[in-house]
Structures are given as structure tokens and as C-alpha cells.
Length: 82
Image (cartoon, rainbow, N blue to C red; front, side, top):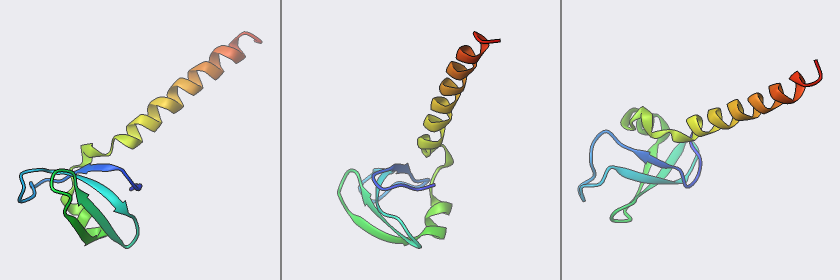
């Protein structure tokens, strides 16, 4: 679900006024960095999952679009043979 250098959006804003964070370390504890002020925070994964907005995970959507386009290309290729 989480990858290094992925940008996530939190439900509440940071003290600096930003709600975008970059993931630096993935594991049981997640290390995230504020995009605006470069503050680094170590937070348990379970706690972070509760604090992020679900729509911030664009990686899943991007992969689904790529798979769909690949499947459509394969269907077009195989439809020529049948």
C-alpha cells in the first residue's frame, strides 16, 4: 500500500499549514517528511493509516489504468486471430 517517495495527504494540516507528506521509510513504523517545512516524523503504521485521506493513494488508480490499457491491447491483438 505504501511506497517510498509516495506523497500522502493527511486529514488534518501540519503546524506549518501543509497537509502533504512524503514517505521516507516503510515498515511497522513509518517515517514521513512534511513537503513544506521538511519536518520528519516517525509514526506507527496503524496510526498513520487512520490519519491519511484515502483518495491520496493515486498509485493504485494509476496501476489499474495501466492494466486496463494492457488488457484492451491484448484483446485487440487476439481478436484478429479469431
